Image 1 (tube, rainbow, N blue to C red):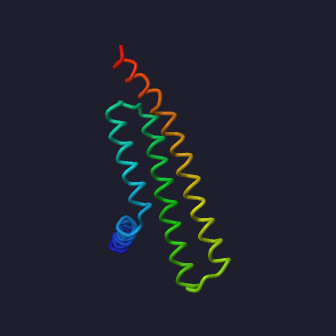
Image 2 (image 1 turned 90 degrees about the vertical axis):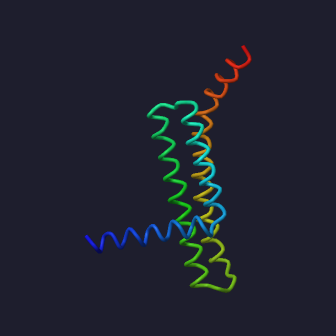
Length: 123
């Protein structure tokens, strides 16, 4: 049990490190916070919450993997090398794809709710 708790502390240390050093992690965090605020305001359904949580996990998880790969590549290949750059680009591309699809899901969830709110406001 003690070993398991220690492994959780290492994982938490990594997450805190990513949030404190990675600008993109901060951006994802701000966007997630805004989604939560708007989710509460617009009273999104349980299924919509589940989709949002899934998107948060996907984007944050891939951002952590991307950061890990960047650090590994920098450690193994401190000099500029085309293959090292390609590895970093591929990992960043994975984050970008997950973020774009997550944003699409967010738009599908929130645009009708914003439209309805605006319609009520105008009428």
